Image (tube, rainbow, N blue to C red):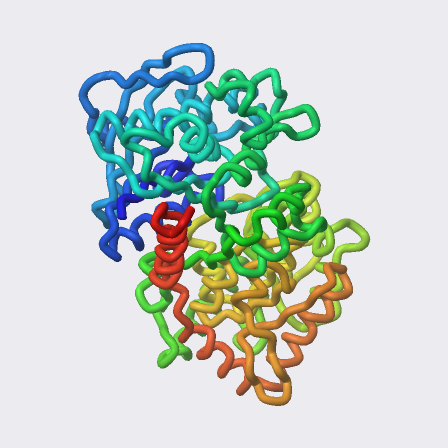
Length: 489
């Protein structure tokens, strides 16, 4: 099949979160299966044109009130032959930030910027004379592509093209004033027919959900959760209506980057048969974070965005968060790597100064994130919701047992420990409260001190699971096939 990925971000070119990793990894995995996969995205200011190839001739894109003339560049996803096409338009993309900046978290012209992307996807295909079987759009910023396909372009060269829309995080929807709707380049009749209308505003994600042929999200449990009011962010009703077209497919892991047997960012490589070498990484982590080097004390690692979604209020909330009690009532060490909400950064800094067994690095450091995965004994993810999650899969690969709230992809990837049999790959809880976090970390510490044979068996079991993108890509093949006109769509 010929598959066009439409996205606002893809590694290594632009990244704000897991979306970028998923798009690139899926495109490469599908290419390995023999599909002709191509990616289109904006050329942001920080994407160096000198490292790309210019596609000759300007490209006219009718978007909104005007014909916009853009440049077109071509690159390739590293380690693959997957072409990446970059829409070059300085007024729209020649600035810092993908969706916004620290000073302006949501650019007020985002409807124009990402409407341009949606229309440009079709002009790209015409320019290179390549017409896809599937247009696969990712999250709200790419949602206009399947909408334009349905209402404007499903004729001529695109008559046999079908659309798939993936919801990576339903909390981000692209909601703006309806007075900006003309910038989408669609008729006002489509404002209601496509599903944009949202309490007298326009909602890109909602329209993408209603207008696409097939829908996916990034884990089976999340596909069920977003059909319920507590997780659906007001989209649960239309997702229940479209439930027959919604499939949850678990994201994979880029095992070229995350593999303890080959990882160049950790001091000692190891695998299921050489697990004893993990102790070298633990000692290096303790030393780097200024903790006593002690192999007998369990280390609990955290790598996270310091945002409400990640359960940081229950973990670090002043006066009621569980981190203080965890570190004062349980014999362990805790290391944190993250950045985000200012109150949380301040609280973590305070804990670092107050607790001898708690250390943190505020910010992001790629090598430290790998060292935390390799050197920790447990990895804590008390997420309020987690569409898929990657760190719990990294942890399993690195023999670091996850401690997670049972939600979304965390529920799909972590098998709860059974004290009687020793089965499982981690520790799970349901209610997001400081007490639940404390109790579950305490349970993990109990297993460390009293059931070490169970801990080691769980480590090996988790490291032996297949988390690659190959299986996920085959599930996407099935979705693409079901979206094709021959499947009755």
